[in-house]
Length: 326
Image (cartoon, rainbow, N blue to C red; front, side, top):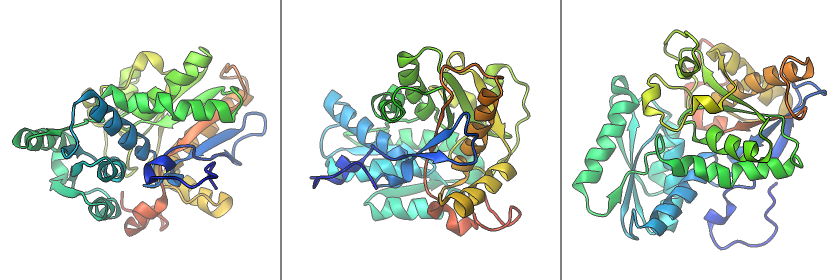
């Protein structure tokens, strides 16, 4: 169920205004509420930046109608941009490391985009390089570059933050969200902090990711299965502001996997590993608020469930932890 009650002119009009739903594993003294971003038309939180960033780039003249948007992406951003691009008279090309979800790449192509794969071992860095190479070969082409473009965070400042604030009547004690580009957390948290400067801000990443190093923690780098959040090279994630974050919580792949299965079987949430990690961390923060360990302005925690588990069924996401392919 959405808040949309009247006929709409375009699929872009359905982006945002997603439900905010209680996570019942959280304590009654400090409930967690999750934003269900799979209710967007492209079924992820990245629909927000796809619509917002392309509209702003057209308005600023970074792109002209009929041009080409080229983006390095693990998948959901590509789907979000692809949904928006065709409606805004733009072509779309996405550069995706091979290992990422086949479902996401199939959906990008179904939406009319071209998908170019780069070797898994070359990481996102090579995908970024290739996107810029392609943009240099075409006229009227641009790389939105979600990892560094302030419009990414601005999209969430303008939409996600106000929606959470209004749904909770302004009583948001903490915001806990996974960090991939960090745009979702940074934009949402900045809005909430502008309403109440004491709002507690927590970044979530998988164990093996390196955001925590920016907070001075000596964490070990390792591979991880959780998709869509985390980084092996914080230098490419320019939107993350360590001075703005109160804590970085690392969640093991196994804990995230256990939680995504629990969320489905007990609470009816068909969400993926990034949501599992966010739920684990948000409930931890809620427990700390309830126990007085964290001094938050309100006894409520907001988090974000970025997408749907249907994107990862080919990786046996609901199998055993050993069977799950990250």
